[in-house]
Image (cartoon, rainbow, N blue to C red; front, side, top):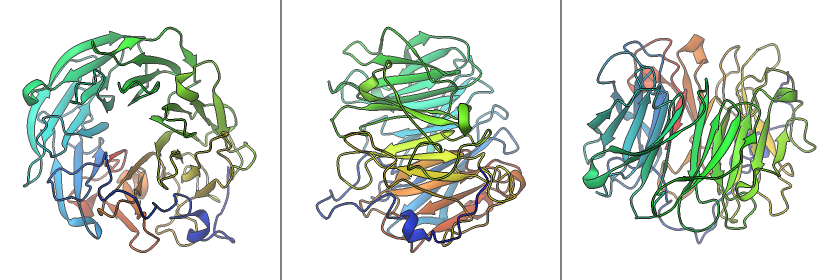
Length: 423
């Protein structure tokens, strides 16, 4: 949809932080599930630039009590050139040393590279080359409930489960699926049994796998999402079970997000720009749902769903991009109070330009250690394809940061910096 957002919509009104909420005073002193590679207590942000010359790059911007510190960054290169290194990134403490580690996909070579965290930063630990486009999508979950996370890696037709016995990565299981041009993978507990389950979208066909003592086991049946976009598992309605959040960016009316409560593939709930209460109007090519991230930002037990719409036209600027925030609700009224913003919104740094593709990647992570989740938005088409990232702090509008690859140590042009994010 073509729109301008400067009118009466200010940053405070769209809810940064109001749209994401404010964590309650009794929140824990350390936000769980946040990447901290150097163990300093502050979350770090991983940014993929898969189009960078030499086969792609990944930039890590380290966090501080004031948020991301652009002066403290690290640029990772693939062991071998080529392969679109940085297409997918995932983080977890794979080796159990208390510091977060990083996995990076380079699907052009069917390679997954693992970097281990330390006080001085990341260093390469291992390289796996299973082939078949492995590393097109990555997720992390403890599928066998042994206290150690597994890495899930989706390729052209196979889902790999990678374990880390003694800290060394090894493919421990594989699941064959349909050959697909686009894939997405997510992990989370769908049925409340303590085991991480997996959702796998291959060219719009969604299938589930449940975790167990022996690893992932297939669940009968599939669902037709329509196309493949962002994918997440989070408790959206507060019933203590994970819900599958699947983007259908090529769907009717500019795309939709479908939510499968508790993994019920038969009864999805759909939300798009034509849903009553959701800002905007859906139009072909908007790509609503191309990226999604879902986490409980305000501490009410229900996850907010942040949706990227990188094909959104802003005024005369085609594919400038926008972001929409849907609020978790016990009765699935996610549209109530939903908000949308772009780089053309008053108070948001940057300028909406043709081809920015703002919202193509999203991350919610605590980057300053204040227990509030900060939103990172990737715009890989910024400045003619160089790419950029915007960060909106969870504590308020002060301290918003917008930067390109050059500010974070990446000199490569046309790198698609911001095509993948993890924190």
